[in-house]
Length: 141
Image (cartoon, rainbow, N blue to C red):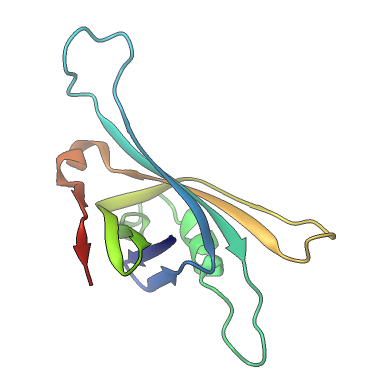
C-alpha cells in the first residue's frame, strides 16, 4: 500500500509512497452533542521521511511543506488544495481532497542514528468550507 500527497497553490508539492509513511483522516464533531452537529472539522495527519538528494536527484518536497507551514494567515497562499491518495495494487482505495487546506502543525525531527529526518504534517480543511471536502475511492488508475 502506498500514500501520495499533492498540494497545489503558489507551487506544487508532491510526496509519494517513498516519503509518506502514514495518513490519518479525522472527521471531528463536539463530543457533547446530542444530534448531528454543524460544527464539523476535517483533519489529516501525515507522517513520513525527509529524504536527501542522491546522485544529483532533487531532494523531496518536504522543504516546500516546511516553508508553507510558516506562511502568515493573512496571505492567500496559506490556503491550498491538498489531495491524499491511498493506493493498493494499482487501485485508489481512498482519495481525500481538501480544497482549502491550511497547516495546523508541522514538525521535523532528526536523529544521528537514523541518518534521515522524519516529519509530521497536520492539515485541516477551512471550517466554513468543510462541505467541499471530497472522499472517493474504489477505482483503478
